[in-house]
Image 1 (tube, rainbow, N blue to C red):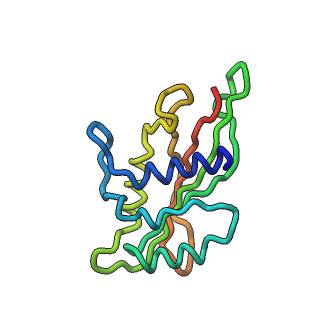
Image 2: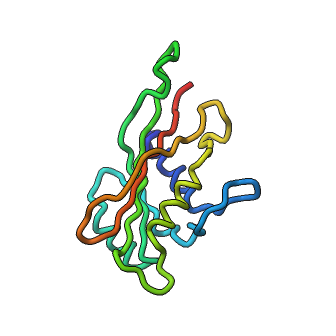
Length: 152
């Protein structure tokens, strides 16, 4: 498997793991979405998302690798990072115990805030960034970008 997909799987694992003592608390416990957090692997993910949203809490999360970026333009040697988009797909109207998309996206962002994917600061922290509402006729969709440094 490539580093880009390995890091996407690390993001997935981080999202479906409950915060431990000393970590930032989240609005929602995302462990309930374990079967609905999907890594996009260069295929049409929409049918899988539709099934996940229908089966679970009315919400699914996808993680898509977007490419590389320069992590530090002032470094003496190239420092690269992977860019990902974390997307929350939700029913436009929720009922009962279904999860609100804005609570899910805020919880996902909190899980990635100050997270060090490699387990140490050699590569640096994940950097959640800009996002917003994605227009769609069938789903309520929010997304945000996260950058993970991959070289030092």
